[in-house]
Length: 451
Ligand code: AMP
Image (cartoon, rainbow, N blue to C red; front, top):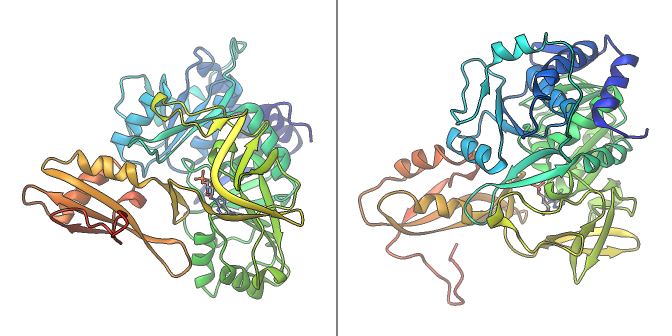
């Protein structure tokens, strides 16, 4: 398929399959006809301005309509899940320059200094007609935020052309007419659920828990796959149609691969790799049983764009790579030579690409990208704290098991008070599980923070 335009592809899908379910979550669903009708109505309203639109809520048909409407109207969207604390949502709103907030849940408000559309107003706008021609189209499709090293969330603007290119690549792996998605919309893995499905006219069924419905494909992090496999009911008997599981976002452990292949036999298990800076994933490898004894590649040479290893580091250039972050303080030197230096170490062997760990900076924790310095900056804002340091405690598989914070406090503070204060500003997965009060941050003899 030629991805001239994402909304155009969705409109074509709607012409082909008007009565097919486009999106389903819990008891609510919309058909392709409803999706494009409502999105066109909302787009008529949105096209009166050009600034990014922050969409705030949880998985729902309204969220999907909001995304589609933004793309039709030429405005970029900034997805914020309801689980993100409001203070952080406000920060994301300011950093992204959002000129409008769409709330997709009853009674929800981002409480920012910009116009806001409530869910009831939203539903009235679906009825709007006569779309005015789009005067100016934002080159970005969306702005996604991840944990930032300077103590603030970091905004990555992803271009429309990168998203179109991604859909063309992802289509090779996600071919089933019914797909299960799990990622939150504020997490870039959701891009792999939403767009390849909608542009191909497939049905996207979303879940918060391990899937219960038998569908043809499923995208998740390895951590989530491990969780699904803990239940005996996640088996071939209950999922006879499941053809493809695509894992992305962190190292895919060998024992998870083995368990998955033992359970599903003929499943197509894909290990996909990529940073949010390059639109979801850019390389992928179809895992076979031989991989259970050795290294599992992350790519086989057929990539979404140019992927090289330069001095041991994976470097991505071409259509997929963003050009920089939106927050000026985060203009990292990772963006240079017309591409993005990922900070991931890699190696090509016999045409296959292998992941060799991180060079520095963030760690993937339960599939989420976490910069410890961002957590530390938030802890330091709490009155009475004079110093702190966070560390990841490892699990037995070379991954982070949980976050621990060492805190030097000049007044009586409890761990719960610190966690409560952090929960106003940080997502749950960034809140340290253990907080230890110390007189000074403990160091190892070589100057590293002691775990
Ligand atoms: P995010 O931008 O949050 O999706 O995180 C991207 C980072 O996750 C990459 O730079 C890698 O460090 C890591 N990552 C993504 N996919 C894989 C994979 N298949 N194997 C190992 N690490 C991965």
